[in-house]
Length: 83
Image 1: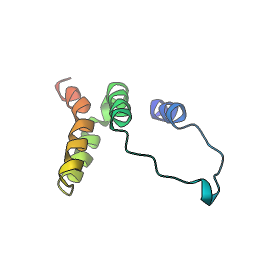
Image 2: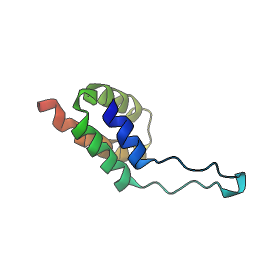
Image 3: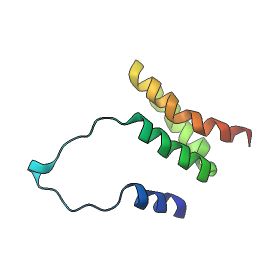
Image 4: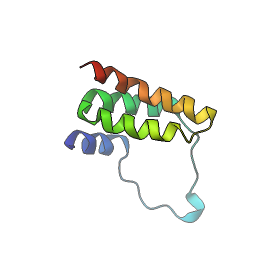
């Protein structure tokens, strides 16, 4: 869990509270999320079954585009199944 906390601090440093006029929703960055998934899979392999269970549950409710994203996020974790 310490690795996840450290990774969270590195990837998502605390930001000052924005005013409502400063808020915006960024575009989906598939490559960034994929890299985060790869890092987590490599550094926290004990979370593999939990992650894959959640991903499989989500993929059943997703539309086609979301299913493709979900498969991309799942693929680094699949390598942990053979270890």
